[in-house]
Image (tube, rainbow, N blue to C red; front, side, top):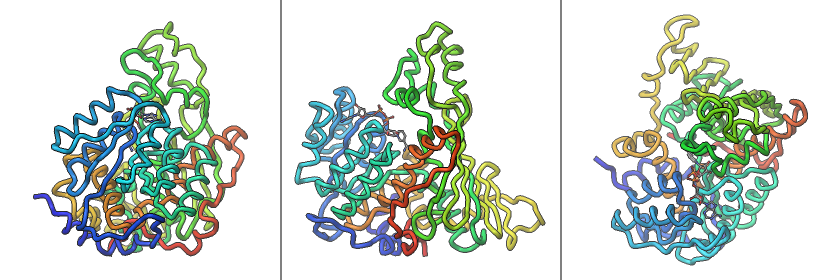
Length: 439
Ligand SMILES: NC(=O)c1ccc[n+]([C@@H]2O[C@H](COP(=O)([O-])OP(=O)(O)OC[C@H]3O[C@@H](n4cnc5c(N)ncnc54)[C@H](O)[C@@H]3O)[C@@H](O)[C@H]2O)c1
């Protein structure tokens, strides 16, 4: 049975209080949550945009008055989804790459969801904040360090929240681990490992049928970096209080050469395919080591070009225990029955289930990524509705995203350490953890 929105808000009351910072910007009026629907404009109606739209359409109290894309077939499919779901036909914006501004200038929108190409995420989120609309952007929030700073500066100037829609921060197992960490079960956290191991060469960077470039292929030709750093870091930054108690200090990154892309084309299309002979800047595996200001470390792997099943390899280790996602196991000095023996994680997940998941379990499973996408959008929409800070704020969004350009700098310097900018400008020392507080 689906829970009502009122029940959901009640279940999250404690968390909502924790999220509220008063950081509402000009033009925002604090309205009663029951008063009116949340009105969202979606920019980018490709695969991901339509997947998010499908979830929004099934939420109570959400309206989509306007959509924008530069490709008519994508826009038409999205309009069709709305009409079939019984919503009013939205206004379409399509003329050119800058037409999103017209959509964002409308005065009947509360928030914008951005699911376009990487280079557009930050400019669009900045424009949305300046137009007084909550910005919810797909990953990564920014591709360059300048963009990271522009997001922070715009948020600070306008007071309008900006959230990178990092779904893995909201994953069910990751939130149970977060509860266990906050309950002291792993002791003081010392080290973490994480990876984004997802072969995207055969379907996402390149067309699966022809092998021709899709929009993201150009990044592999021009850059050598961790191209997609936020899925790994999503849960890690809350596990380690990054941005609220600790902060990245330096990082070093090493990339292998590129072997996998050429081999894929030879294997799939033959050696004469034009993409089989090209030189790609991007190494197959990037290994980054971050040292934090408080003396902790994180190993981050980028791994999107070799054939393999999907994997994140999360592992978090403290003075009193360790969690290993691949093994689906924990070892906790105070709880585990056998000395130095792993024990299964699922009973711990059940016991430490996060309140957000308890509240949505009956309705979430039907949506993308096992309900994780539903939860992240639900939390974003509730923040917009209640005029509170978003669960992931602008600082956390750019801390995760900055690993892209910073890893590129370090690789270019032969793996030399690179200083990580403090996007909080010192506020990490006094900011309290506020993501997913669960009393
Ligand atoms: N969080 C996740 O799990 C997840 C999963 C898949 C994709 N993504 C992210 O979602 C984004 C979109 O990826 P996708 O796979 O849907 O790609 P896609 O090519 O299917 O869709 C992108 C859409 O953006 C549109 N677009 C590009 N520039 C535009 C502009 N200036 N104005 C209006 N529309 C514009 C394109 O026409 C296209 O329809 C990417 O940033 C990707 O990293 C996230």
